[in-house]
Image (cartoon, rainbow, N blue to C red):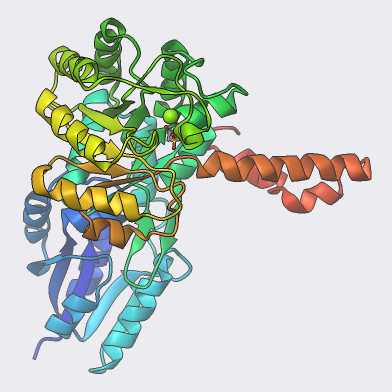
Length: 433
Ligand code: SPV
Ligand code: MG
């Protein structure tokens, strides 16, 4: 009887390495290919270029492939338990990679029925990662990037967003990955925080860094990344200016802007009532949302309204009233903010929001209530979680420590152990040699 063979691929970008793998696997027996679903691809890579049904069709037409099944996770176990293959075939490149834990689980599962993992030499000179880099270096067109946030919102229970304030921090958001037992975790989108963009320029977060400068930062980040961008639009400025700025951002390929319902000299929300801040009236802020909506050219760009009632101690009822009004005015999403250490008031808002928020995405920024796991936010109906400032907050103390080490020692030898090797920094960004 034919042996049963299984391989799993995303098949979003196909190259000769995949064909080698399929040929070798088909030689061993009857080959089933698990094609990663859109959700599975998005969970560790990026939103797939080709959708699942099309990828399945392509794989099914390759010689040697007998059967195609969806693989719902990066983890193989569910499909292996169903199929009980004699062999799983994979390139040997995953041994020391981010997939090493996934690999271990494959070996352990196959053992249950005496199955075997066969690792074939990795096809040299070609890889999906390499091709992806070439594609992204060629540039990500605004239309593609702009649509990515809405696409990911459809696929994931919660969209995980990380702060970026310049090219290098955006590359961290683009490339950071962690391999876990059953998944590979990465960030879905970037938050262009007003706090960290201002701080990186040595300026206070009071809308002093103007839109022209913010747009420069966006361009700098867009040149080297592919992930969708959510812009912290502060108060959105004057209604008349907002209408223009929305058009510019949409044309550039930004996916969303979040504007907060404050007016006058804006201060950072995490000061709360320690400083003077004024909340906008519901009527005026709704007018801003409506004007923004009218200026939009595409169905993709999102205007998200941020409610400052809890920050400014105006009460839950006010926050709820505003959420209802902002949705009615056309907001594509609501962000509720709090500076409490406990998530209680945020969760209370979430509960009430579920009664009327329909499918309008809810956004949280857990800088203060930082103990909450993403899974708990999902349970409370949150769709987007923004880690708003952690990269700059970790970079600054690291730089200060290094600077002080040099001052203390009056040479740089001691600081070296805190630094990445020169060879690594030289090759960190491709194209320098
Ligand atoms: C930012 O990151 O600039 C924000 C979020 O607006 S917060 O700093 O919490 O106000
Ligand atoms: Mg801000």
